[in-house]
Length: 581
Image: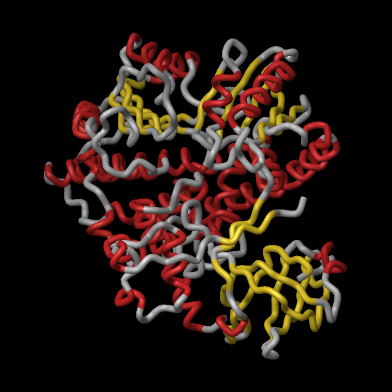
């Protein structure tokens, strides 16, 4: 389906209107004004914070969380008397990295204070157990001797399970960022969005909340005399950077600072497991950015929980021996390849029956043969393709398990909870991503109908066609090294700060060809009216080659970067879309 091209407004307000301050941008390409204004960044303070994310100003005190001190006190009570502490996480990259951060911090604190940190972990199996706490996992933890439970990236919706844990003598600290219901669990809660919560930044991934928890623990340990070097917690930022990208939280405010410095740490990580994963994914230390995480490292970590058990990824990140790290990296690589093949098959199957669903405001697709672990990936791809919310449901044993993805203007978790009342056994997630389950086969079509009715009303005034948001119009003559330097100030890119896409119109095609081993990509040379020629690469666009004929005029949408080859650096334009002028 062809996407609509939507060009952002080029209106820029002056300083007298609280707008752009020219003195801050005098060394940047003129396009910087428009890119900042399009992001709503117009005041002097906002511009300074965005272009130069500062650690001291951008990172908040962890004790601003209203229950942080109480949670820290409870942990140190457990450490002092040798209680069994279990870190209980989710099976995605956010949950796995959060587990590792708490384990690392507790082990370091225990060692420096002379305590044996009696810490273990538990991650449920995605298909066999499902998300969050369960009555049977509480019973198992009790048998193992757990008396303090720390949930990361889960727990805020487990009111009954945490009450059960309390009855069995297990205290709980919840470190989470998910949406919650009308009732909160009886536990110590570290969550940025709780009612009346004083923490100023509300959009942390679970790994960000967990890192704040770890920082508070380390501060308290130093106050008790632990000789932990100041800044030791920064070595945990390699993990923070990974999950901040993969969990798709807005890369603004504190998240932008965490990711900027996290990428610095990731590019010199001490973790043998991460080094092995970076190597096997074909990347190099010193060259990693947010896209390296989103397309290479993140999917491999997530593949463990999708295809087998997330514990595999956790053990990789905790690996201390190079040989073990290499072996575990190979395991994740194989799981990721398997994940890719099965996802492709599921996409083909879903595409065969998509026509009967296109008339609805929401796509609801289900198949008993689909892997519940991969339905979220399929839903995300259909959202991107059709511009509509999408829910995909697979089956494991006698349980149907689904996942939904939605655009920014539709709360898919709220929709699923509302439509699934009386049907679903579980439901939770974020505004744009959710998970749920039900048991009876006949509930699938009923649930689908309810979702369609909900979306029909809620999305009545929304344009649901897929679109490309273009940040500015450029001429080929504007593509210079000053532009490259300016764009580097806008990194790292991601949700809330997308990589800028530019449009150039009326370019003549002088050459075009398929490239790649099987011709899956296309390469073209395009010439402006002034005679300037620029190369463009269209990755995975090889099948569209015949739409671009030599001598014709085209409009193009693209992003701008740098290609380095044999010591030569050239400006590279990567096609996102094109059309006849």
